[in-house]
Length: 116
Image (cartoon, rainbow, N blue to C red; front, side):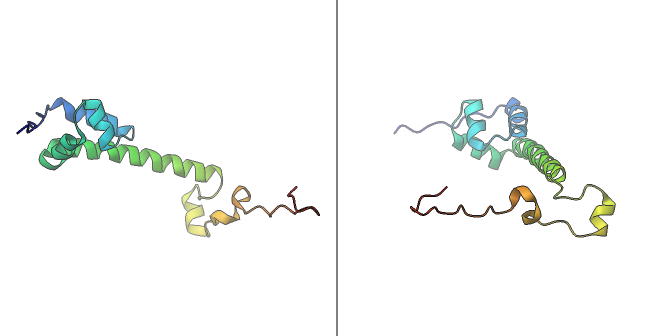
């Protein structure tokens, strides 16, 4: 029987995984970085609290970064209020109200049936 031995966990993996997850890495990406099968990463996440906490911390940073950048974009496009007074005072414009997001009218067909 050719049974694989479990891959030994190295505590340095936690720090590497946290930093890589801050960049948006998936479990598959972490496995490639650490040169182990994905199953090993999944097992470490289930069995090692420090490794799981490091991965979660990295992903929390990545999620917060994405959310902050999305808010910046929405404020730039004036789809999200930028001040507390704006948030309390009035309704937030709907996404469909923004000119760049409105549906464009269909192109008219010419007499021969081809679109212009």
